[in-house]
Amino acid sequence: MSEISCIYETTLINENEKEDLLEGKNLEILIALLSSTKTATEISKELNIPIFSTQLYLNRLLKCNLIEICSVKVLDGKIEKKYQLRNTDIEFLKNIKIKGQNKNKLQIKLAANKFSNLTKDVIEKLSENKDHPYKIKAHFIKADKEKMEEFRIELEKLFEKFENSENKNAKDTYTFISTFALYRNLKESE
Image (cartoon, rainbow, N blue to C red):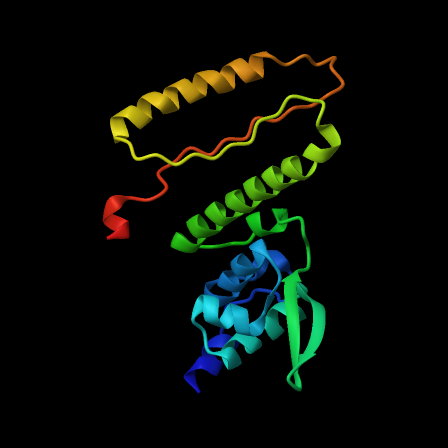
């Protein structure tokens, strides 16, 4: 019973104002829905929340118009609903008043989502622009931190070179998207 009371005691200044909503599990559910549509069961498993509690959180987010049901199916005699963010422009999440680690977690998820969408858009448009120069590549290497710091500096110079290539009168717009970071630490994988 304590689970239910903690859900109903979630601090909301005004349930009709998106910016006033979120701490804890409500925020975690919104973050989970950034990447794709999900069912209550998928969210429950991903966030390790009991399904009943997950449904209560989803109902509250639906009531506040932050999420919506995007599909309904009947599987094995059970109704399965898929949920998605109501607003696909995730800018509104930046205005939510969040404290501590949740704020940092949200900022990272927002950046990853934005970056992912940009990259997806560019790749999907390649078939329309085959006659223009492009390169898509991913490479993973084991390397020392010092060597990678040297590479990061070179990458910064390459970005500067790309930026300096701009011709504001040109009709075509090109993008240079890069991710350079530690992928996995040997200690983490052991």
